[in-house]
Each structure stands twice: as C-alpha cells, then as structure tokens.
Length: 150
Image 1 (spheres, rainbow, N blue to C red):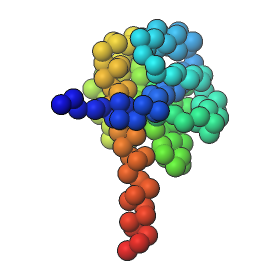
Image 2: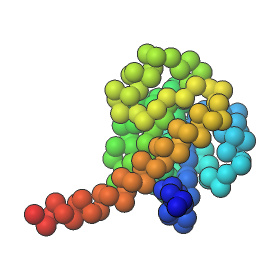
Image 3: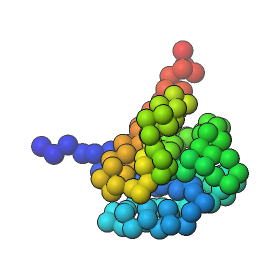
Image 4: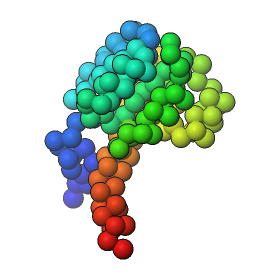
C-alpha cells in the first residue's frame, strides 16, 4: 500500500513560495532549482511588496533573506504573525552559521538555508515547511470549533 504525502492527498493544493530578497539572482536561482516541480514562486524585494503578495495570494512558505533594504527576517517574521494562516519562514543567508540558525529558531523561524542553495536541502526544507503549514491550516478550524463548543 502506498502512503500518500500531504501534497498527494490534496492535489488541488500547490506548493507556493514567496522569496523575499533584494537580489534578483536569488529569485532566478530559486526558480531554476524548483523548475522540476509544479511549485509556484512569487518574489518580492522588500517587506512592503512581500506583504502585498501575502494579502493577495495563498502562500505556504516564505524564504526571506537575512538582511533587506527596509528591515530583515525578524521584521518579516513579526509581520507574518498577524496573518490568519501564517506561512513558516525560512531565513536565507550567504553567511548561514550556527549562530544565525540558533537565533532564527529561537525567534520562531522554521529553518535557515545557506546561499547559494543546495537543491536537495532546499526541496527538503520547503517541503517540510509547506506540509507543516498545510497541517496547521487544516487542523486550526477544527480546533477552534472544538474550543468554542466547550
């Protein structure tokens, strides 16, 4: 018997990623690395444009460069907390070290990825983050209904 993945169980759901980085090459690199899939990539160069996309599209995972022209990953994480179904945040950096990883996880980020991206690591991390988001999203209405009933 084949076990269905979260994505196979919900084929109408497409993995959607928002890449937030001031560097156009980050977005194009991501697009090349995920071109094998049916994943959908949105891109933004700053927090304000990222928030516009998040208000208009259903995003399952956010990849955010450590430093942005108008803030950084902590600012992005803070803004995500106000969304009803906040996508997990994966911090990206050319200088992804243990210190950044520990700090990011302690603040609530999902993961940290080094650039240039390793395709296997990227696919693994984004897949797990998206499944986490999908599970949270599916379980939240039931949990909220149960809370209100008691």
